[in-house]
Structures are given as structure tokens and as C-alpha cells.
Length: 189
Image (cartoon, rainbow, N blue to C red; front, side, top):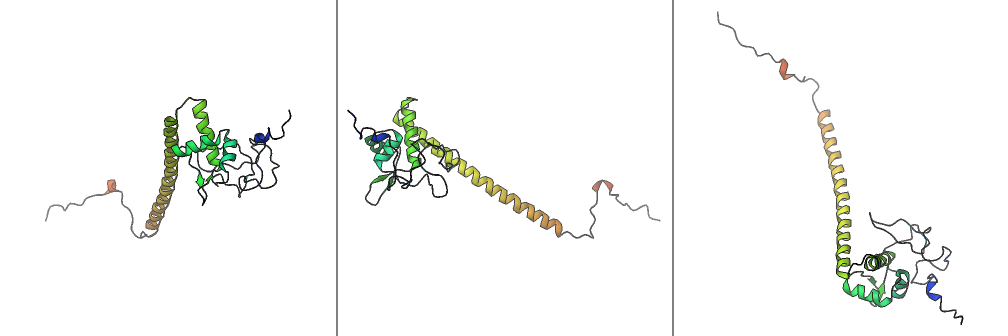
């Protein structure tokens, strides 16, 4: 039997609010990397997702309904609901409390699946791995902020030193302390 709906799950999502692609999906099937923009955030990995890169592409925009996100992550929607309840991957919510997943959420779902299936890590271990990863990202951001603050402080110190040097009087002559001769009065006559 040839069922035209049987292969529907392999078709890429197109158009509508569930996909950031718009009506024209000329980029290809899921996994096509050419249209992806660079991932935001230092050290964050991005899984190949359909779409176009560019200024309008936002990895954190909650655009995928649960069925599309589950399809992109290769999971059952009920698994995504479980992960949400456990706090592993928490999607954005609409005004009606419907779940909306971002491209970053889908990438995180794939990482959870990889850790679980390929590495054999249980859900509590995955939760701790994700928390440690979030701490690393926060610490990296803090290091960047501190480096920028230090650079500003150094520039300000250099400016003040240059200002102090510019204000020195030119009629004063620095004296080498090794060349100082102490005068002692001789015997009185």
C-alpha cells in the first residue's frame, strides 16, 4: 500500500507560526546547515536547523509548537512535556499557556537525548550537567565583563598618569640621590 501521509513526518516544516521559514522553504530538509547563522553566546553549540541566517534569525525566539519541536528533536511530544515538568528544557509560553520552543530549546532537547541514549546518563545527571553548563556560560560572561572593566580602569589610570606628567613643572630638575654631596661646615676660625 502506498500511503501519501506516511512520509509526512520527514517533510520539513514550512510557513505558519510554527516555523521561522516563511512560505519559501528553499533551503532544504532539516539538517541543512548553509542557512544557519552563528550561534549566540560563547561556547554554545548549535544543531543544524532549517531556516535562513541573517539579522532576522533569532535562536531564542519561541516559534515551534510542541509537535514541530518534537519532530525536529526526534522525540515524542510527551517526552518534551516530561522534560518541561522536570525542568530540563523549559520552553516559552503563549498567553494561553501553550508551549513554544526556540531553536536553542530544540538543540538542548537533542543534547538531552544524546546524553541519555549515547552516554547513558540518567535524568538527574543530565539536569546537573545542564546546570553546570549554565554556570560555565555565566562565569564566562562574567570574565568578559571583568576584562572589559579592567581595560577601562587601565585606560583611566594611563590617562591620569599622562595628565600628571603633563602638569609637572619644567623648571624643577630631578636629582640623582647617589650624586648628592652633603655639606658639613668646617672648623670655625
